[in-house]
Length: 260
Image 1 (cartoon, rainbow, N blue to C red):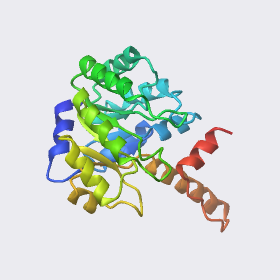
Image 2: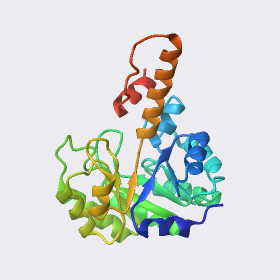
Image 3: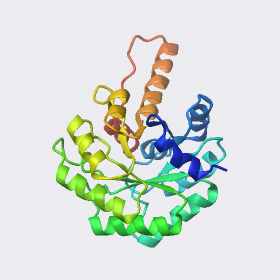
Image 4: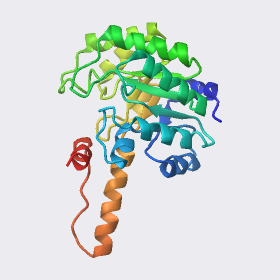
């Protein structure tokens, strides 16, 4: 069983925690075997592997089954639960309690909704507080999608308002996927006395630069899953003897695959 305190400590080491995200037991086990000190899950990968779309709340069962399996790994595991798979506060708190009972070390809880809006701030802080009361041993990484849903024009004022509110509600860390500019990263690091999680984005973010700006956790999100799809298609095409190049899969491409 994973020890939550060990996972918490990983956010306060000499450098940021590099967190790869798995989508099934085999990928998680392989990442642990490769030497990564902790493993997360990717909600896109978990949902898509089951033929479902991400961020719609449909992959709750698959997420729990995978969490139970990944808890067998010799490293701490944190689970992406999208928005909690419910708008009812009690449901999300109950889910957190169940994850903790498996030996899961942390969870990722986002405020983005499937209709492209953000959950009302008072509701989100109520959920965060309820989760921490129900399962205080879990490292709750509170994610805001202010950059994801802004169409390239993130509202920094709203971002800072949300991460500060999440911290006050009891979150253990904050996650702003899509954040990349030095000034934006610094602003969030200075706004809250909690570890900031940033998403690694090829061509947009670099591990060394994010570390220098004070980021304490860098996750890969759906990148590994999408790269795996590309590698699988490429291998099949190679076997077939075709010169067709395997396509790169974006987040939207994967969503389109499973929504056909």
